[in-house]
Image (cartoon, rainbow, N blue to C red):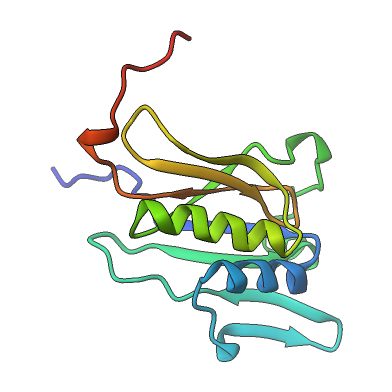
Length: 152
């Protein structure tokens, strides 16, 4: 019998200000070519980011609230859900977590968690995107930095 379980393949952000989201993710270093930004007279409505090849297909997209109401008529702007999703980005080094966090906060974006050595062995930080989504920046994990997990 074939494996018919769902496979994760996409993060799609419904943005209240796609222009601001585009600027944020480009500043973060996400490759978003101009030909992958769909604009109409009323502004940006869809963005496709270039995602490096991985073992699984994955996509990172941004849609305007107006477009989301078309493809998901049940979508509503629920302010109480703001920030309950963490969009994660891997960076190559521990130093890059610090550098990128400093660059983004210097540009005016809010830091939700300053860079630190997480117990699972990665350098980790969290910033907030223009729509209030948490964006995690994480280095590769290293046994050298692992620690016992905290009491929860």
